[in-house]
Length: 207
Image 1 (cartoon, helix red, strand yellow):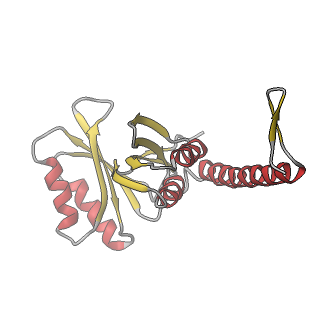
Image 2: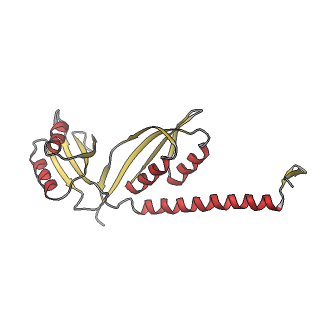
Image 3: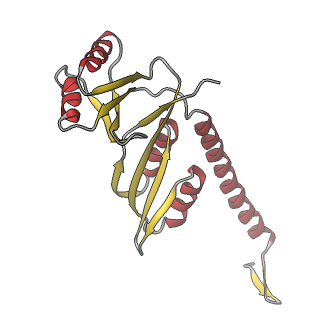
């Protein structure tokens, strides 16, 4: 016997109620799992990433960026990401370089960085705890999965910046743990374009 409407309210049979409750419990269980992942991601935002991060404070002079980047490429280093922007003093910029290199070879490059004329300061985040962040922008064709994508964004704290009849433009920021899991889950959807800012880092202040 199918459900029906009585006095303006939907009435379900016992079988339909059980089926509805089962679907609801399944959705709640999935949401709880994602919330646990998210909570763990927040806890691990200060965990050092798999790559290694160096911060270089440089003078705002022509050619500084190419000289610093050339120091890495000339020694065969793979730069995972490079971010440069003005800092608290407009005379200087801060470069954040993320590399897949460790050990003695990296120590040698850091020593060479100190010798460059326009380099003011080099911070090696192997030697101090730091907070890491990265921003990801993506455009997704949602089809009939718009609600699923919005739920995923809500769980991971991602923001919808723009929407059309067919697409969503999403922003998410965070540490490596959080972004990796979000991007892995988004592989189930039609991501048309993805842009990453590259990693930035700030050393934690001493208590």
